[in-house]
Image 1 (cartoon, rainbow, N blue to C red):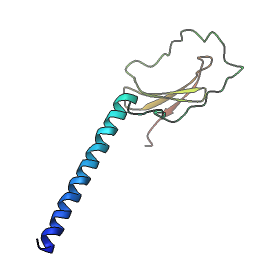
Image 2: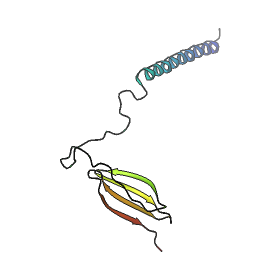
Image 3: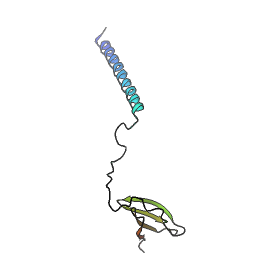
Image 4: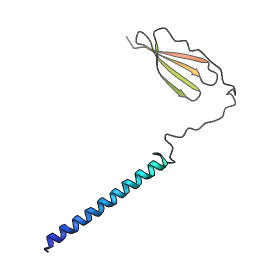
Amino acid sequence: MTDSLRALKFLVIAMGVVIIIGTAVVVVTIFQRASTGWGGDQPVGPAIEVVASDAAPSSGFGTRTLDVPRGSRIVDMIAEGDRLFVRLEMSEGAHRIIVLDTVTGARLGEFEVRGSP
């Protein structure tokens, strides 16, 4: 055999070994994820620290009604600390942000978002 044929034979064997090892890694990874779940023991999202507050009533605040103007719709809500910000889109296109206390359920106030003339 010539040197070029020997080199070609060596490369073919080496590539075959790499393919077999790569296939084995893929199979082992699929088996591990199927048996432990995709996330394993890692948390899915950022950890949230919960701090107990003396001001929080143990029984909750019951059912509260949030009155919104007719024709408006809730666009989104964001909780930050003990505040809940509810963004409304009004019927005329303006936006309003209502601020609620999540501990007591009280309506703390609201912001009207207007475009400049």
